[in-house]
Length: 197
Ligand SMILES: Cc1cc2nc3c(=O)[nH]c(=O)nc-3n(C[C@H](O)[C@H](O)[C@H](O)COP(=O)(O)OP(=O)(O)OC[C@H]3O[C@@H](n4cnc5c(N)ncnc54)[C@H](O)[C@@H]3O)c2cc1C
Image 1 (cartoon, rainbow, N blue to C red):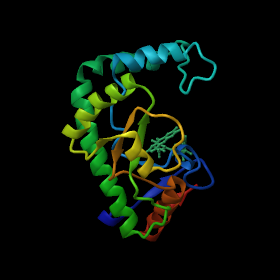
Image 2: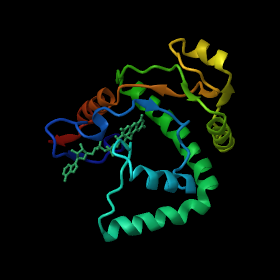
Image 3: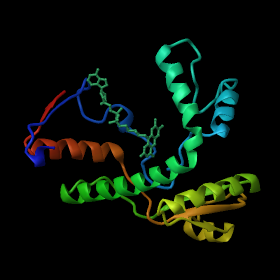
Image 4: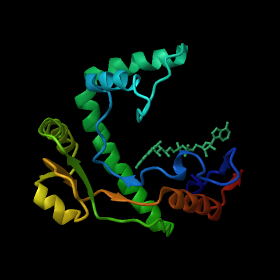
């Protein structure tokens, strides 16, 4: 916004930028994860996870108006699963391009690795489900192709387990999001913005 002539002030409760979620996420700059979560399988998975102590994601069922209206909206969007996945793929491709351009323009070094992202599948049903999702990602304009277990080993020689197959997205990449966000905050200050931490 500063480069468009606005006066920018960023307020944050932490002492430094990027100390919350953007501190250390998975580091993926990926459009290959653009499938939206609004489908029946997610609901079933979420309900099963509520019975597991080691669930990767847990919903606290305690009553809250905001939580339950959000859940109702989530379920309501299941009917738009295909359309929303295609549109999200387009958005992810554009966002990834924007992020690369920003890093380039502001010379932000964030250990960018442009070596693609490989998804691996141990079972045939999982691979078949991924193939159906891939059709939607392709419709959104993403270059993503199935790879055999031997091709997977060429892409990632460290793989050890037995896999049924995978999908490779050459245009995806990884980076250090904490470094990127710190670089972005510095660029904001250079551009005349103020950080109030
Ligand atoms: C485990 C995990 C892995 C992920 N992996 C990936 C990945 O690989 N690739 C990817 O693209 N995305 C990933 N994500 C998602 C991504 O990390 C988040 O979407 C992103 O970090 C959100 O950025 P943000 O700036 O909106 O939020 P945050 O980085 O959380 O920033 C919010 C800021 O608001 C400040 N704040 C909050 N309340 C107040 C207040 N009252 N007053 C002042 N300041 C306040 C906080 O201090 C914080 O600095 C992952 C997320 C998680 C949890």
